[in-house]
Image (cartoon, rainbow, N blue to C red; front, side):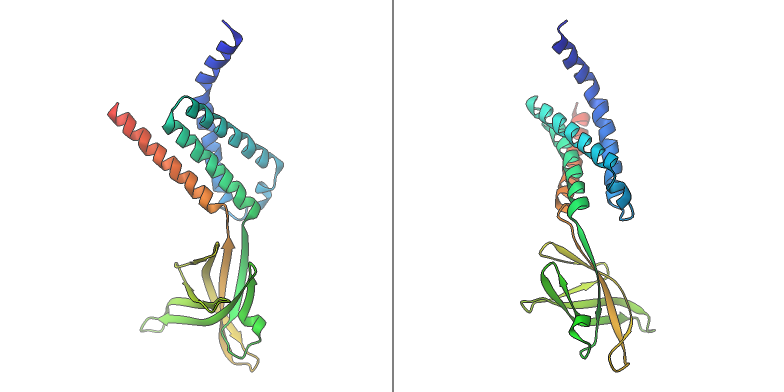
Length: 219
């Protein structure tokens, strides 16, 4: 038997378990990427090397499936590769800003404004909705952007604008220059260019899994 023929048969037998193992490892890697307290893991050389190996394996399997016109398999492994790529983009290029803005018209500008991603963002108003007994029900922040456009962000309703996502986190008491008590709103702003690639990858995985299930039912 020719060596190339033996190698082809070996690859044909091993690629499924290898792909399954790689998928499990990549899923674990994606879970690690989802938690912000794992920067020491993300920065390690072994983690980067493992991601590169997984990515190369998935790309190779995708190309092999395309060559053999196995479209569902190609979609599945391409989705896994996209998840890894998106996670890598997130780890390398995502940025987060913690922003506190004081709701007082007499406060200095630096207390009411922040420069975020090259854009000056100003606090328009901070509002607290309460229940009849006075307990807070919802709190909202109105932001003013350079062109004068006003946008609102509240709990569980983030604001997405120009690739940035604004989250309403909390609020606290503050004091203006005259000692009067005012509110300070606390926002988290995040820019993550990898999230679209990651979600596209998960979408491809789900679609491929559904197509596999349909194929198994019909066979």
